[in-house]
Image (tube, rainbow, N blue to C red; front, top):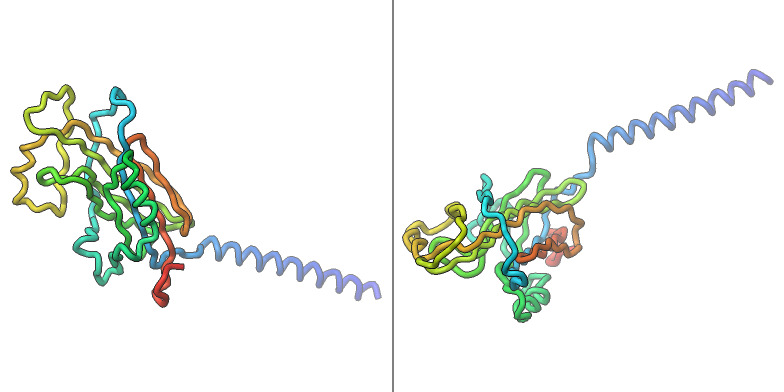
Length: 238
């Protein structure tokens, strides 16, 4: 009888050990193979400038400006086999926010676009430009990088340039703007009609959850972004 009790206890202990082992194996498997959030998303981006409230504020002149490699131009690859699909204005989700900015009198809407794309663990670099045209450049230029791990990530690499007519007396010297990778080179000579008064760069990285509106703030430049998982079997984002 004693032997039987001992055997039952031993079996219970063995079962407990095996159960712990299964949890350990499961945890290890999940650590080695984390849930992948790589999929198709609908991305919407708004970039706007705001009226300057402190004209005496100092901005560094040693800004470093460059475009990353493997840059995607939505204007030319917006409906490509790589999954990029630019959406019409009627399918944007932030039209009301953009309209509020446009009629505020305090903010200037520089960029508003929505598109669908695959977002991967590796970064996808997307070319961004908008605002008034000055020769071969625009007020807003640069890129954003999108990726996904445990969370979605957006990294901004944007700069806002203030131009003045050639011949204006300026006290500060600014670096040359990098040539746009997709510019019409026949317009290059027109750049000589303008000088750079100031360059404001916004370089930030933000982790974000899908389906939420995120805001990247700056004294002179604001970024609003919303990323929604998209089921290609449906006609609307989840």
